[in-house]
Image (cartoon, rainbow, N blue to C red; front, side, top):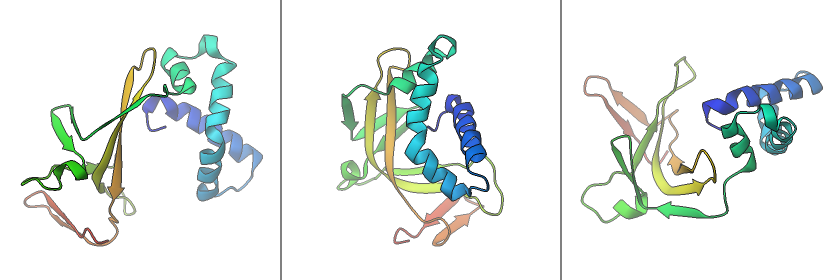
Length: 158
């Protein structure tokens, strides 16, 4: 659900739930979304198939049953390797960083280690989607940022 095209549908679902359950907390809303969004989304798209963007229609059908797993992946000029692949090598390239889109006192970047690379196959427009499974570090403690050199040091035991 982390693609821009899905945002309007997630917001629509959230508004429906908020209308049904007054004063629902964000944590409770997230649990309801996890449990019920997919079924709602499939039904919503199926009843409006003629007016829905073909990419959204394809997403609602889900990927095929075949998946591929990779130990390495090249994308947008970047090379990624899984933790297992780099375990006995001189250099490791399994670190990942997800930049936050905006900052406030309660947000920071996410840092982790790439564990698996999984490719899902769709049958029409989308074709293939790669998923990175990561082990994420606690960024609330055990992190030092060197702004002068642009380095981030993370305590991996946190």
